[in-house]
Amino acid sequence: MVTRRATGTGGGPAVRGARRPDLRLPPLAPWADAELERDGDYDGLEFQRADLSGQQGGGARFMDCVLTGCVLDETGLGRARVLDSVLDGVRGVGTQLAEATFRDVEFRSPRLGGAQLHGAVLERVVVRGGKLDFLNLREARLKDVVFESCVLVEPDFGGARLERVEFIDCALKSADLSRATLKDVDLRGAAPLEITRGLDRLSGALIGTGQLLDLAPLLAAELGIKVEGA
Image (cartoon, rainbow, N blue to C red; front, top):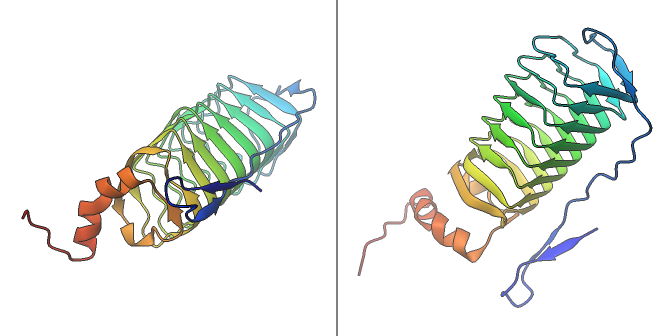
């Protein structure tokens, strides 16, 4: 387990670093079907630039798969299980992933808008690059998740549980942490770090000195502190 410490604080409080997926994919066969199937079983397949817009694959299982350049506009994948897989350059609007499970998964440069992952489970997941707009992670569980070199615009973590989650060289804009529970969450690599709701839920998170200064006016307002110049 990686342990990260704050610098310049005399040792400071430690946070446990996220465990990353260790993917070793087997030789893959091309996906030859025209449409996804509900509760389908996809094992060792490569989905190459497939347009899956509007298709319904709820409850499907993807194991040892690679999705490259696929279009996921309004694709229905509620309660799907994505295991030991890579999603590379996927893009879509309104992708339905409610209560889906992602375990040992890498997202590479995704471009998703309004993806619905409420109630989802993410464990040992890396999101590297890309942009995620209006990501709905309400009531989701994130454990050992890394957001790296990506932009998150108005992500909704309302009621979610985040444990060992890292933000590295990320932009986190207008995040909602209402009712969220944070444990070993490292926010130091988020710039900007913008939290519109749920400032009171930052217990269990690690931020930098500069971030604290940026958040100070909002924290003062949250606590009802009036601040005036000398």
